[in-house]
Image 1 (spheres, rainbow, N blue to C red):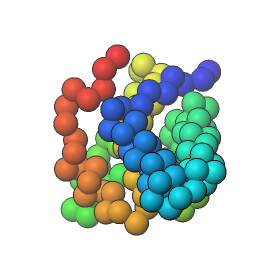
Image 2 (image 1 turned 45 degrees about the vertical axis):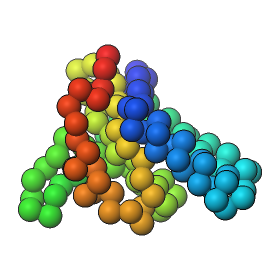
Image 3 (image 1 turned 120 degrees about the vertical axis):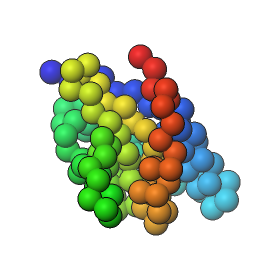
Image 4 (image 1 turned 60 degrees about the vertical axis):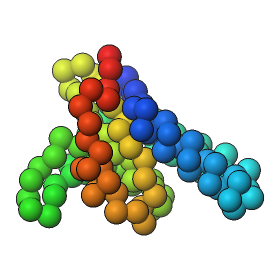
Length: 115
């Protein structure tokens, strides 16, 4: 059974920012397109393997509800898996060099995901 995948507003903004940075700041539209396709292909894997990502645990040992899937060692895709609803919520997409754990935990606003 295939799992439904939804992107949060944050994830949509993150992906747009990644594409814009590569296309305009690095002057490489082809690389931007290739990178976004690579990220979306990685996200699509979650429709068949929703528990593929690692559960995120803080340095204090707190187990969060988030999972993270690393894409090509460059991007961290954070998501929530709702088994009951058969849905994956892509929450954020970060560059792996960012302090993505701190950003993820500081940006956990409720109500971001709507059905």
